[in-house]
Length: 481
Picture (spheres, helix red, strand yellow):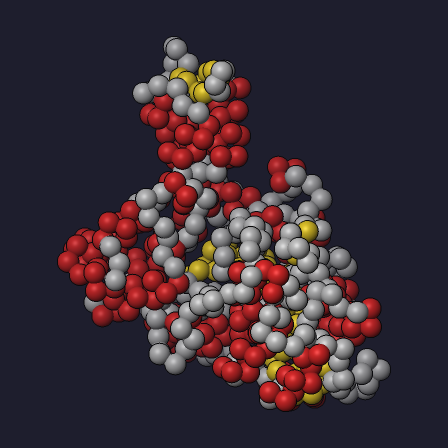
């Protein structure tokens, strides 16, 4: 994946809203979803698109009226000038087979556009077949601490989904998430994993690479692909994407109250009416009966029942895709912040402390009948978070450098930005020796990436590594070109 693989609008949205790893040292932060919404409305009023910001007309508009979007001109111009940092980040992501799309792209999921409107995330990062994002399907949701009986039930329902041509949408954590993913993939089904963190790391795991390459798994996240779990805010925020990517949702078990991620996500879905919500009845969670009282449908299907899921869900089991003309109309307007009846923002205004929302967090979705072959059984025990808030990476078995990347984008190759780095390094070091951290900061790249490239430059004689303290300087007789 390179800059050339991005649409013109997506390139600009990524410059404005994306994180590339060096933001702590930068003068201005990327735009938050709400800020981008204000910018989009300003662009619409001027009959401009995001890509127009790189033209003379866009520069004139920035200078004259960007304050109407409640943004500083200097900040927007700074963000638009992060081309080198973006190129280096794209190279890192390409090694993991990642892609990036924005709301202006035709590949952006229709369900997110229709249901979230201006709250739909400006950017989506992912790995795998983007077409799976429009498969719809069943979001299977529940506790990370699921009982053995609940886990068996989850697997059985997920296997039914696979057998009936329904995809499974999952949040990728342990417990119900992992059981749903494994149950579907063992039966030859399709899965969509909506991740709150570690997308790049997860895309490189051996088990996930198999599913990605076979076209039965897609991983997607609206968050920085290299983000760790942190305080868990992303995990709470991504619940709505799990629901809105599906056609219906099933809660296996839920605790009672707003401190439960499962409960909060289910109540939010009931409030907005995104998809029909079913709840296992009777279940083992204190919140199951309460959710039915709130308006969810009881789900009493037993594993040995001869009834079908499609029969139970009725006409909503397999959604009809939009017509081509409708898709084109949506794409033409999708970079804007549409109707005011949508949720105010993709991230909740207030999030409880980590200890208060340790339950589970929701899931994504697929759509119509299957297409290819089976995925490894233990597909996605990914980035599960234990009760202390720590991330337990159960799928990464080998260092990143040792893993083979998934083919990327349409071109199928990963750029090597080392030559770009080395040419810029010559200019940086012309004024004297610098440390790894100083070089990483000046080039807006990760310190670990700077260290790896500096080691390479030192080994081939392009720079000298000085000690006490460790710094890098140009070799005395030559250039770095």
